[in-house]
Length: 517
Image (cartoon, rainbow, N blue to C red; front, side):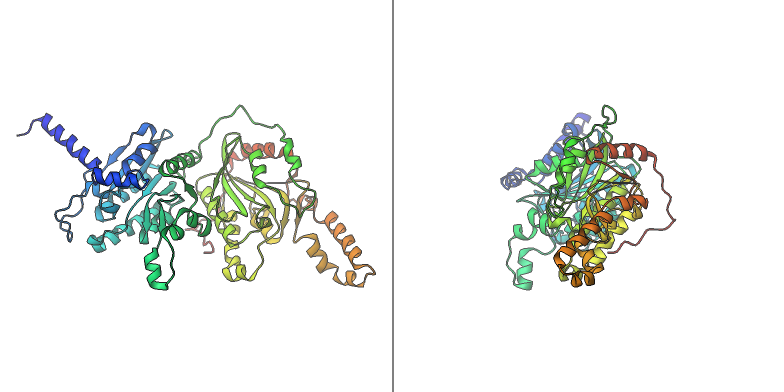
């Protein structure tokens, strides 16, 4: 009979063996590819490198076809809990050194168990993906496992934040789990995300493309818009995750983390008075506005490489976390198109689910015109913004900087969509359309009949701009609460945030709204 000491030694040896995953050679191969192991990633993620591994001794079903004699330490996935930023976090990290991190029944069961714990305990969940896909030997058991993971992704949605790191291959059905989560961080060069890989595509369509061109971080971030952040390597992916978590509440019943400041900052930011060019056709950089409104170095952009005509991200104003949605005049003149509508709607709904106030900065000439946009469904996609802002019950603060034309003005959280505070700069042009377009419709016959049509058009444009392309008509109708100097914008937002801390808004009782899909 073994002594207590011997049993403890056996446990230590068994634990050490499992921690080695697929063994030293497999670990060396992982490192040679520029990738960390599952345990190394988790060690970097958690405070002081400590985490409590759960279900370490779980094993695959030994009766599975061709698997009778195989040993799969931890069944190819490390599941755990620990603290990140002194707050509870659950995570799973697939171990590529163990049978390519393939997903079998117990592998999926472990992931679902920690997701269930995260949901019940109100803690964020991080999934580190590095897997060859479904474990073919386990056939339908593997597919059932994927289905359960998708089901739990959906259960957790809107309850706790979910972050996916794509640090290796993530192909086929496996790609849908990250897609169901809130944010995807993909490692450049080693992370690949796609449904059908290059070989499958070549056989099916004859198209020849590399894995990096098809499913690499740049392609999935800038072209498809599936990925929110690009990481240089595994270490950078962990750093992005930790930074992102610092802006988020642990669950939908909490407010975002507050970082106290030395009182309410009401100092004017004089630089903002010089931002808007005198020529309304000239562009400027919206990032300069955001940086001057937010606390120093607090703006954390999301989806930076996709639909760059709109900017989204988290920031802090006097220590309070806000979600920023802003048109970017330097790209497509700040127009809203299909991709910008999808990008911003996703972010608005996330902020609303997790109690993050919304600050919207408006300079939008309209929705993007064109046959491609119309046939692509700009009506349906643009309606997502209208729905998302209208459905949001968090504090909503809108500032109109310059152009705010037509339906795009409404889509950028106008007063009619439930904005709690709307301010406008003196340079704001709030109208159905720009002066040139409006004059062409309203005074077409007068211009044609004039001795000097060009001069007459110029006269009408000037008159229209003076009467209608200003913030004062909207302010007179109560659609704008205040017309402010640009330099006072940070103070205006800061005061509004303080006042709206106790906002409560009751809505009709229903299962859920039906957002245009």
